Amino acid sequence: MCRKLFAAWMVLALLGGMFVTRTPVSAMPQLLPAAPSSWCVAGDFNSWNNASTPLYDDGTHGDVIPEDNIFSLDYTVAAAGNYGWKIVKCGDWETAYPAQNAWLNTAAANQVVKITFDANNHANDAGWDLLPAQNIVNAVDTLPASFTAVGSFQGWVNNDPNTLMAHVGSGI
Image (tube, rainbow, N blue to C red; front, top):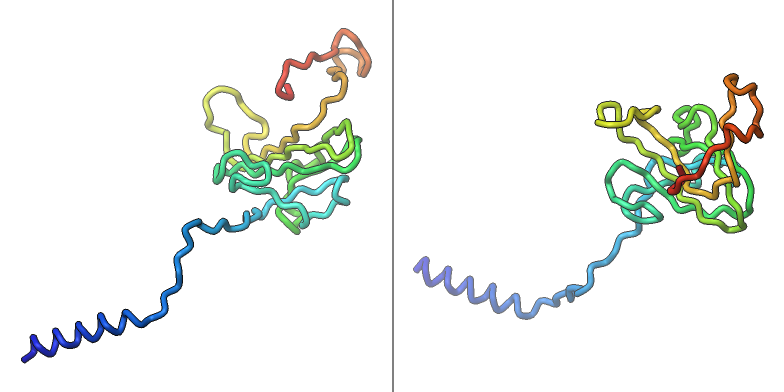
């Protein structure tokens, strides 16, 4: 008796399922919009707004490798010029890198500059000793025509041809 009742119940359940409206499954996955990080860039080029320009670590907006703790942004600078900037915890001037402003140069209007913030700790990495070892900021921009090493060793002369530095490529 129990078996017959169970079988009848199963048949009713199967028949009932035939009349349920089913939602079609999309064949293409829906892409989610990129999520900004809690790190922002603030500088002369965005009126020092410390909350409006987030960096990303998800492979979008100029970020190369997702979730590597290196936050990036391809930012279009409206006018050619020299700009001070820094990385801040979005909306928080107390957490900012570097302590003094970094700078970048653009040679043309609407130039795209790649801004990066490496939050990894490199203190125990083999090879070079990086200073700082963590919270490293960088901008891939337009280099000036030349740089000169200046210091007390050469009398603080900023146009000394003997201490003119050479560009070797890749921003170095």
